[in-house]
Amino acid sequence: MMQFSIWTIVLLLSQAAFQCTAAVKPVAVECNPPVLSTVAVDEPHHRYYPYFIRLHRCEGSYGYESPNIKKCVVTESREVTFSVYDTTNRLSTQIRLQNHTKCGPECKASPLDCDLKVQEWNDKSCQCKCLYPRSPPPDDVVKPKKGFGWNNHLCRYECNTHERCPLEKMWNKKKCSCVCTSFYEHHCKAENKLMDPKTCACKDPMKSTAPRPGFMTYVESKVLAVFLALAIVVILCLITYLWYRSAYPKYPFGSSGKLNESTSSAESVGQSCENAVRLGNELCRPRPTLVPIDDPEFKFFPYFVKLHQCGGSCDHIQPSVKSCIPLEYDEVSVTVQVVGTDEMRTTQVKNHTRCGCECVHGPKDCDLELEEWKPDLCQCQCRNRDRPSVPCGAGMTWSRAQCRCVCNKQPQSCGPNKVWNKEACGCVCKDRRYKNCARKQKRVDEETCKCTTKVMPPAVGKQSSPKPHSKGGLRQEFYVILFIGQFVLLYMVFEAVLYRKKAGLIYRITRSCSTKGGHLDIKESREDILSVSSSETETNLPTETGHHNVEASIKESQAVV
Image 1: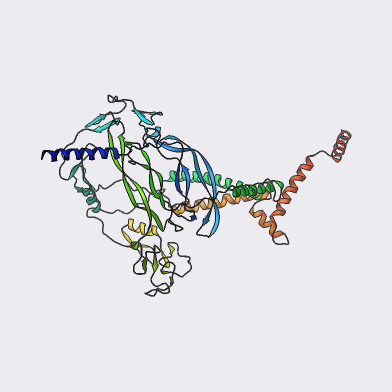
Image 2: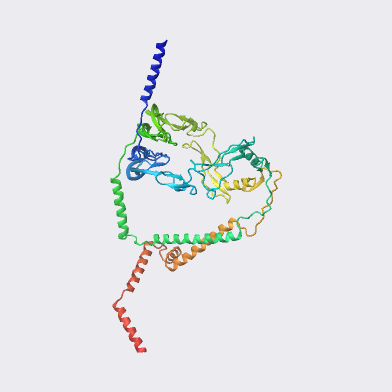
């Protein structure tokens, strides 16, 4: 019996030693240099093939700093152009992605996160340093509250008491007092009443003796009208300037400047085509990947380890249809250190050994009345593709692609309060009409889109007073008409100015009507402008006839004298 117990102790000790030796001590993955990772080309649409490629990415931790304090960001990158196949349009195209070449640390927080009264920003530690780490700040800096005590670690006042509350109340640590539960608040809202925070009982709201304000006072409306008029003037000036530059550019159409720009752009396109790289598609298999130990707390070091993880696409099937998942994995024991202490722990992480493909969607995504699930295709297939089981309604036709009845009518112009709805295949009232009527506790008439009878009567004791007409209050329609009128007036003024300069839309229309051909080519107008400008420059140059005319005028003036 004694020998049996000794052998049992020896066996247990050997198993414990084996478990300690089986634990893996990983190497921390540094932020720099970049790590080769599997990158999705067009996530989440996955329209381009290859779906996944291998590029360098900035990942990992910066030394012993927690990723919650300093994060790894890209500082230098190189643009890579490669050819892909567009599965939607069935065309070959090019796409550009950034390949990270150099990484560096960046503070996750900023000086804006600090309370400048009691904290200051430290660039080295990327944290807000407390100005009062041992004692609370003076009363003129932060005024203490009743029941709150100074927390040196958080650098703020925290509630340090806890009282027993009545049944209808609960303790609130932020307010450091007992507050009513949310049940009483919702109950009073349902009865259109206010809640008394002391007794948690519902009471009628106080009747306001002040008159209800209108949409806007007279002074506010005038100030708003002036500011909007100035904004419209600035916008019109900018639009006119851009239009004038586009209509009459510095280089006329067909000049050497435009040819040089077009040739340079063509050469750049040709160079980009030559520099394009053709990358292969990354299939679904285990590959080395950076895995965080405890994201997002990051309490253990190392913060990131390199393990095999499943990734890539399933043959030529889009990842939005089939995704890569792990089928087999090994539990790896990793020895980690608790940050800020000397304590060592062992945690379990998964190292993927075999991968497989799984459908992204399932039978629950199908409309079982019209569709059936096809596991080999990983999609829902229509039961009756040629015709529906139930005939479609008026104006509706059967769609084999959508496997449902769709509207067969063209969108029609509806009334002022209605809008075309494709699902209803007709005109329905606008959403704002339903919101306005619901605010007035009324329902919407589907024909006229007006508010009719009330849905629920007002609460007892709550008297509804008619809305008074405030003096100087203006409706929104007035401002809309005012702004449209200002826009038209300013536009006509700018057109008149451009007409005097022999430019603008009105000048073109009048000139095209005066010509026999009926239409005037834009090129002719540009040549006219160039000829006028050239003639003006020529008249400014001195000529022989000009000298003779000057001499003759001088002689005439002397003869008169």
